[in-house]
Image (cartoon, rainbow, N blue to C red; front, side):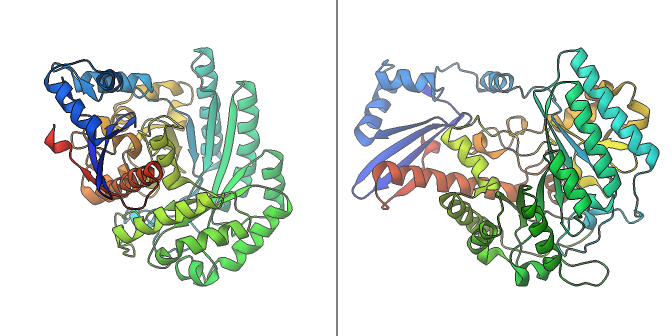
Length: 469
């Protein structure tokens, strides 16, 4: 018998005693032992004795036979959670590559190719896009492979620059989803400066949810988020839009980008977002841009502030998504978190020129591509068999050599593939920035859980897996 390479062993020093957490890194199963139990366990392993704790840890795949194959277990986990092939459940709609703002940290426009021009979707391409989606869903239904729920996300630059397309497509999507009998979620990620009464009526009729980009109160937000034309701040316009949404009882969340302008006040931002009526908040860490330097903020400071803000939000009953998705996986209230982004085999992105990609971050440098709405609208399922989609679907931590034995793999999600390519050179490389983010969260969660278990603040944790693997 031995400890699996996919497990971790943590030694806890608390006051004058020692304890141990034995953890399955993939499934997030944690087993807590006191010092005498752990020493007995070591003795039982050495003597190949089948004690009660050995049985429990074998069931959790923490203790395994000598000839155990970690790779076979990984393949089993991939099949169990349907990770071995693409399943499209998310559709991103981008009708233009232009924006009315000039946010100082924008990685989308900061990654535009030098010869990239402002471009809006033509009427023909718009109709072909909707026809592609309709045919895709109808053919999936014919094969009895349609998912139970689909998400449609309006993205940009700024999606509301094309209000007519937004309204018409929402109506068409609602009609098609009803036809194929599938639940839908429609979400618009917007800077909120172009929301009108007419759009609000459409949102209300079709239960559209909004994620509003806002980085904090006026003096914070207007430091980074400014209009392109006059360089003035956007806060007052956003405030008006929020009041209009609240008046019409339309739910909205906040999308808040962490930068040097607000990294010190994320807890205060949580209080502010709750005060203005947000249903939740999603924090965005800065991504590298292909052709532009984004404002620098310490990775360590950013993550420490984010973790504190998320914990504060949770205590104040405001859902924060970035950290809490990992909390759910760690606490096993949801399945392990192997994908942090739909681009890893779960989404299609419809670009303004009619091309279909997998990642919304490539709006200004549209690659990699899996198809085209005009060429593929009559045979839309063909794109599922392409090598590009397979390559992206395979970019999961369990398939990355540097990642599969990481203690944080079961809560990670793999980081940002765009950032891995732009900043670290290759799609299959680690997003090192995100590694810090995930490891800090794991350290925090382990420490928090042990403190609660022992009912003390006097806790020091050390990973001692190297002693046994």
